[in-house]
Length: 341
Image (spheres, rainbow, N blue to C red):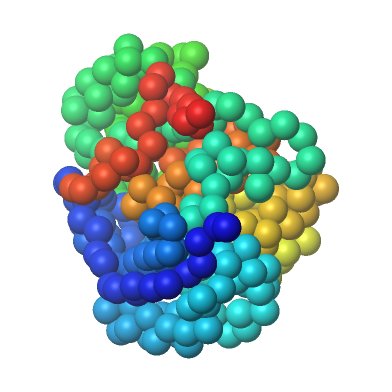
């Protein structure tokens, strides 16, 4: 007989990056989160993680909410608890993701997860990733980009928007020079500009042939994003503008983006993500899954989702190596993560 749940631990656990990452919204170094460990009587342990954008108070509130949801799990089978996830009303999306991944990892291997998440077709065996350029100065950017391409990376991502237009141009030019013409180059502005400035920058960046540019304007400026998309010589992606299911629907309805960059832990359960991906596909909109610099379990679950949903884009899931304590986070080889057998 399979084991039943005998003990659950829910604790706040911050993650630290090996080096700060600068964005238009400031420097990232320490990220709050909540970790859930679900122990079964047969010795198995399911791990779940809720990465949080807010600080310690948010973690405390989420822990209290998770404790209420899980208090009746003791003595039950993981399958029984998982079937009731959709009824966990009022739980924040990161908490729902933690519950889902804890129960799923308790009963399925990482490759089996991809099958659970599949939308009918055979899951992918390999998931493509992009590599983040973490340097800030042009000479260092060019050197790192060239090293990444030499190591087999096919898609690079560069943060922009925290300098003047000439400074950004120097950095984008350096990234393209190091990456070469055949490597996909993605840019991420993290809501840096107003509409007029975004127009100037999009025109200026166009000669460097970016694959797309993420979130040039504020998440709340949906009409501006839609206008920019109609004008832009570069495909546009929505990131901060798609932080829950309702906002995904608004962006799709407004035809405001060519690409949705979905940070999975902010959306809820795997079932919710699957429904949103299918909605985007119905609109002809590309989908890229991305991390919140999650720990190993959350990253592996997102990789399994990408495989199960047969999302062949390069995803933002090569972030485990950026953590001070990566654990057994997925490690890409030549821009690809292979699901373990």
